[in-house]
Amino acid sequence: MTIELIVVGIVTLLAGFLIARVVLKKGLNDHEQNSKEKASQILKEAESQGEILKKNKMLEAKEKFLQLKAEHEQEINNKNNLAAQRDNSLKQKEQSLGQKLENATRKETELDTQRQQLARQQELLDKKKAEVEQSHQIQVKQLEKISGLSVDEAKSQLIEALKDEAKTNAMSMIKDIVEDAKMTAAKEAKKIVIQTIQRSATEAAIENTVSVFNIESDEVKGRIIGREGRNIRALEAATGIEIIVDDTPEAIILSGFDPVRRELARLSLHRLVTDGRIHPARIEEVVAKTRKQLEEEIIETGERTVIDLGIHGLHPELIRMIGRMKYRSSYGQNLLQHSREVANFCAIMATELGLNVKMAKRAGLLHDIGKVSEENPEVPHAILGMQLAEKYKEHPEVCNAIGAHHDEIEMTSILSPIIQACDAISGARPGARREVVESYIKRLKDMESLALSYPGVEKTFAIQAGRELRVIVEAEKISDKDSEALAFNIAERIQTEMTYPGQVKVTVIRETRAVSYAK
Image (cartoon, rainbow, N blue to C red; front, top):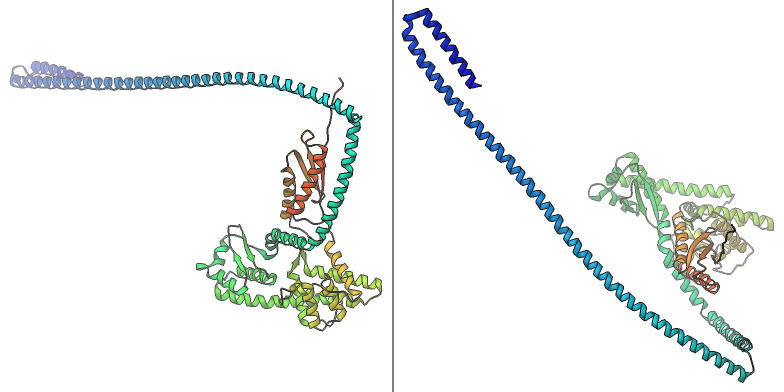
């Protein structure tokens, strides 16, 4: 492009030169000479620039060619490498397949050899069996000739003799077992009770010693804990309850054996969280106010209960203990509700029998008063309740009824068996003593898994609220005699390894079905 411009410029200059030459003629000779020199100089510059541009274009073309050549060579090298890798992998696969084929051929040869050996051994066994059977038949015929009895007659006589001997031995063994059981019954009963306590102590402790305080968000947990745990330590010291702040969402666990203290901690936490001011001084103030309010509520509950039942003249300390029953449970049943039920039942029975109704109500309400006492925890609650009743000048018949409702002492009045019967009625009412759902479901699953652990068991079903266990077995693997033994073994394991109310019926089901179709 630059050369073309230069050429155009030169042509223009020449044309101008000619025109000037014509117009100016001779007067511009000097100027003409200068123009010629300039034109020649411009031509030289244009030629030199054209050469430079030509050289640059040639260099660019060579560089582009070399770049494309290098890329092409790189691509070819990559393809060659991939091809080499594929060839290597194919060779390795061929080698492994060859080895596997050799191994399979060797194993097949070994199997053929073993088959031949087994066939020869089977032939020998068949020959031996035939010889043994023949010799057995000869011996049987000889024995029949000698004894004068057939095989069936000899079998029946032998069975009868064995039956008599077995009966005699069984009777003697049963007698010995019964006598030994009488001697060791008390010891074994204590062992069973201790084992039961060991297995159920943890679950019962968790159910009866833990309360849950629900919070709106986990942000409150940090405020309850406080800086370096000051708030939670102050709250634990003031209430005597261990406060557990773990990963449980929107919940704080209150742990302690005293239900009144747990209720105190729960109410204090509720007040502190609602108020929003949580610090050690405020915690002590709130706990003191809550304790006073809780004591007043306990006394009010006791007084209201006594008034509702129409009982008069109770000692104030006994009234306070009745109020404490509200925060105590026994076997999942609220103690205050249980005592009210027993008192009403006793009143009905006393009315029908023509006894003192007020005294019966009094004894029914106070029969479990020993469970809420803080004195002499090593004494049974019935004896402790009787001692408290005697301490606060209750009637001797009431005291005897309280102490004798679990047969701890001898009954001396007609009122005592009534209290005992009404206590049993209240506890036996369906739904009164509810189990925790989780523990109930766990017991059913444990019962089913226990039966499934035996070989030959196909399915298990715990029905009738866990009071019956039905076990379905495979008829090909379990015979009728084995079914009886299996039912006995499962029942023994349930009796020794599990805790359950009442009794559990174990039913083993074995059936054989023959199915055919008429077409």
